[in-house]
Amino acid sequence: MFNKDMKIHIDWRWVGIGYCFFVAFLLLPTYIIFKPVEIYFEYEFPFSGFFIFIGFVSIAFYIGYRSKGIAVFESGISTALFVGTLLCRGSSDASDHSTLETIGICLFGTILFFSLASICAWVGKYVQARKNRQIRMQISEV
Image 1 (cartoon, rainbow, N blue to C red):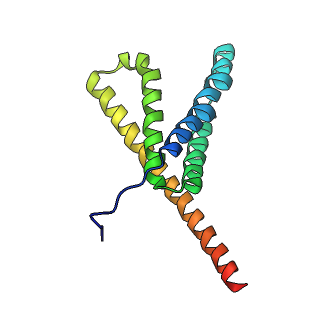
Image 2: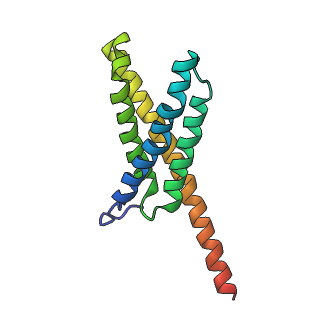
Image 3: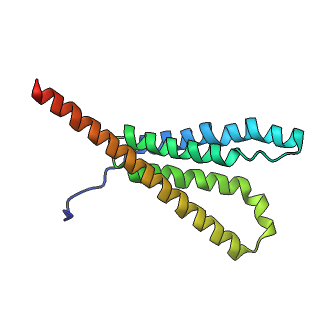
């Protein structure tokens, strides 16, 4: 099934692009849009979690769709970097929990988001392959 000479090709450019997308389209809008609203109105914006979920799924799908390498790993690595960024940002909130509980939450979050990003990237890669197959079939018919 696996060839020993087979090498895994990860396009590191898409890892960097994915991380930048996560920061630019998820982290910054959260601070620019939702935090001022929460502070000014003293109201926690309930839509922010849904916004982050939709953005996360969309970015992981886009990485899978556009990447030429193994998109599952590329999306997963950029997700792990982004979750690490979130954990560094939220480390001040972690003082309320015990160290073991904090480590468990961090590991669970990283595994959950890595899995979700990998699934979305796989779907994006599937759509890309299907589109390429349809294009080849149209070209061969002509």
